[in-house]
Length: 112
Length: 117
Image 1 (cartoon, helix red, strand yellow):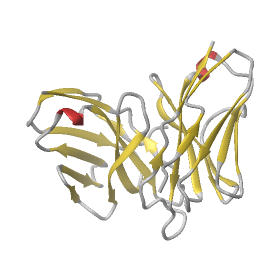
Image 2 (cartoon, rainbow over the protein chains, first blue to last red; image 1 turned 180 degrees about the horizontal axis):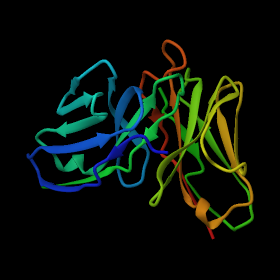
Image 3 (tube, each protein chain N blue to C red; image 1 turned 45 degrees about the vertical axis):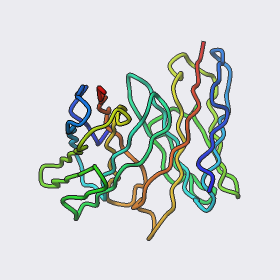
């Protein structure tokens, strides 16, 4: 079963605004990762946060992780038209099982 | 450094046929995983290979199989194709750091879009 599950949102925002997406999961994890996918193409890794981390930044991206609530959020600040894509969270379970469990993704449209 | 290469990019097959997809990982990456993406089921893990051995397997029927070669290139095969096998098949490679847990990013290829008619 899918461990990562985003809130099933389709976000439509204006360029320059911030976009926030949430993700929840069910079991213990080693780390949680966020990926972006443009138009049914390959996925691009955005950021990885380990289970012992609470917040991480990378450029305009900010990720938080709350292991007590089994949830994560991805914030994209000052969005650009090029940020239009689907965003997926994926968990790597603890216990040595080397696989990504993806959520269903959030479609984000940034209007120029 | 070249990225993950998947061939072919597009494929149309008839029900009952079989298909082989190929994936060349990034040089030095020994872990190769396969995922199926469909609008209904989303991204689902198929299997992972490491050093020519299948290390993890998802919940797919035995019609789905794979292998990895000594140069880390991987192939997946789907036999007796069904309409529901139409999907984007994605391959990902990763560099293992510190053992079995994937503590680093996975690099994905552009995928092979399989259409079964």
